[in-house]
Length: 266
Image (cartoon, rainbow, N blue to C red):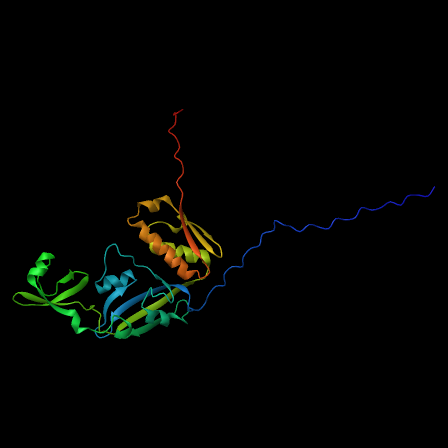
């Protein structure tokens, strides 16, 4: 009898790991400010003719200049280049800067607070000011209707009010320092949330970013923020500005069913 040949079992081809996850490449770190960068800057702003500081992000400068206000936030400012979170002319000057770099930028009136408009200097009767509970005193800042101005002269029955911006017609100087450039998408989103809701730790927000949808799970504590709906609208608008590919932003608040009191059997 002939011996049967033993047939070796064929090796099954190795299955590809279907569950293998594809990880997105981390965002390339930006080293120079571009036209769509998201950055943090510190600055001090002065009027060029007299060198008086009228705005700053730095607490020590605010105190030295006598413009410090309790409750104001003194920290680097978040700026999305191209969206006029600062003056447009100043944002353009940030392009090309590197982290740690500083520069002084002069902004002419036409690119700053505008030129002075003689038509915005008006005579107003004292009786009308009285209806707005405003005192007719020279130098008094007033709100009249939808306009804000300063009383420059007081006459018999009238006062002269200048409704031009106090900075109108003046060249502004900004001493600006680039603190950081944000490249990571999640860090960008957390910075946007912090800008609108600074009082809540940004780690309390759960974030999800896909190509078309950005989802932000809001902590329940946000419900106690006054006018929270405006902050949420701002977050959504800022997110769509920074994330070009996103088609929608979802803001989600989840409320869990409360646990029954201990010993309650019903």
